[in-house]
Length: 295
Image (tube, rainbow, N blue to C red):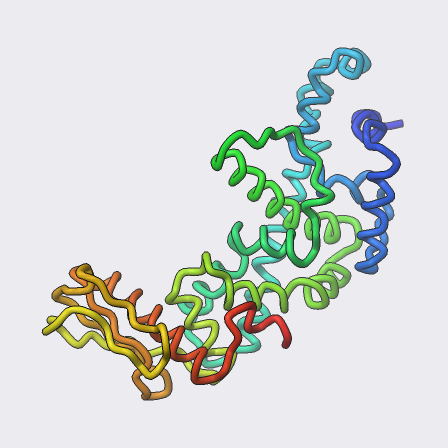
């Protein structure tokens, strides 16, 4: 048995049979068939778990000093995460390129980053793939910072899973999995997620429903505070802060959908996008919850 297999077998043998059955059930449900028994579980093994095992003298006593040093690299999911991150970025870029032939590179990049960022991948993992039930770690949840760490860990497991599919099964199987189980969910989350910045969220919505990008026009100094009500109940965004020297109008297909005012141009543009989202969703009868989920 090779040195790598010896180290991996130590970790593998710590995993309960019930857990391994859950992992196998997930893979079967998504038509995944791994040839390497360890790589089928490795995407879900966080370094906090594998490092915890490394300090166990009953385990490490069986290893040479250089084997202990290489422990984390060959047992945790971090190397797979590296490959999966690049693979997902490529496949999302390819899909965006083909779906939006007239959109410029900068806008496509913004859309891609919104679809593959950690908060989006966490929602993909927890709401669509349910990987939060499979991730193995030794991270205590003590406060909000620790909870954010757990969320990133679960998002990383998505990338590691994609890396494992590519390494074990090749690109064609990976591409099939992403197109069948990942892309639609990413579009839905990117368009509907409350954590998404208003400007890329509006862009995703307008490209999906009318195949056009929003057009922001700087009007100049704002004569008054507040923002306009565009015929949508509850869409008025007004406060003392809204009074400012910058005014930005947001148009979609030549029609005014939002006005933003603030002392800062970027804030004014963001407020125009926020108002335009409400008006655009009302106009096109887009539900508030995951508008792209039923594609």
